[in-house]
Image 1 (cartoon, rainbow, N blue to C red):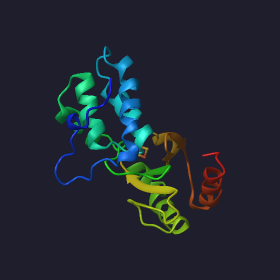
Image 2 (image 1 turned 135 degrees about the vertical axis):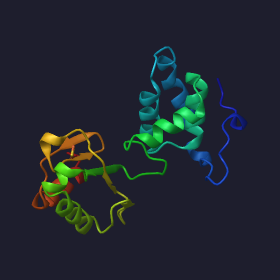
Image 3 (image 1 turned 180 degrees about the horizontal axis):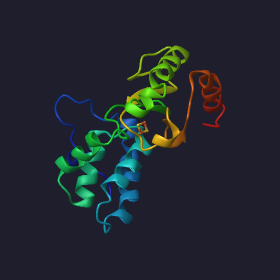
Length: 176
Ligand code: FES
């Protein structure tokens, strides 16, 4: 079925999805078909959207709500609840460093500082080369690997400041 752009309007105040990205909505619609009969599949649907776009644009949330027949407010609630999902475009490599107590005590602040220095960017932002987005988040469920971080979906820990150059080189060389 073709996408009708009027069905997928951008909320006020948000940049509309660029025309070049719109074909991905059709791909997303196809990926959602097997999820339609599965209860509680909104997280899987949102992962599919984020994999396609690098973030979850409003048009994708509208499409997921339509296809899974759930309220759009519910989809938005899931996106904003989980730190895995982003409402803004992200770099190909998203580093999420845990800042919660166990990781904090194990040295997360120094790890974050080392990553900021190595990437030339403050956390919450994307490096000047456009390759890394650095985020500081709540518990990743990797408390036995503290201080822990995720590189996209890959788990790393414990990661010490001295490990940062090799970690970043590995990601750049595709070994993330
Ligand atoms: S406290 Fe850091 S992963 Fe749980």
